[in-house]
Length: 94
Image (cartoon, rainbow, N blue to C red; front, top):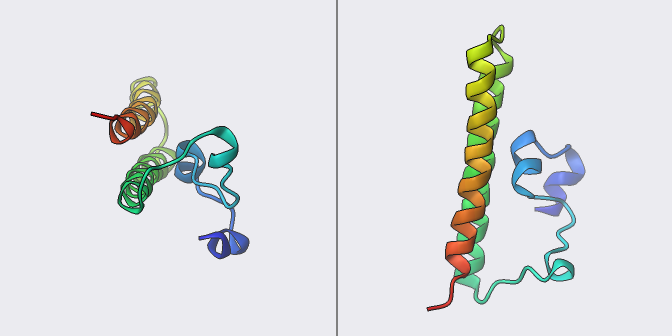
């Protein structure tokens, strides 16, 4: 994944969910317990980044209105909240 970022800047969605070319999760204490869990975390992040990019690209392609701006802002917050809650759920210990 690092080579992919050497060729381009991260997208809006990748920046939103924290997909970065130089992960520092261990530094922050964000670790996963297994390869399977790591794959799930990566997939949640990819899906949320893709969704955020899709919404943003559509939003900036149109003339914004008050309602579309409110809906866009709320949608970005909802995507971010979903990502954080999904990752918390994946990290829960039974």
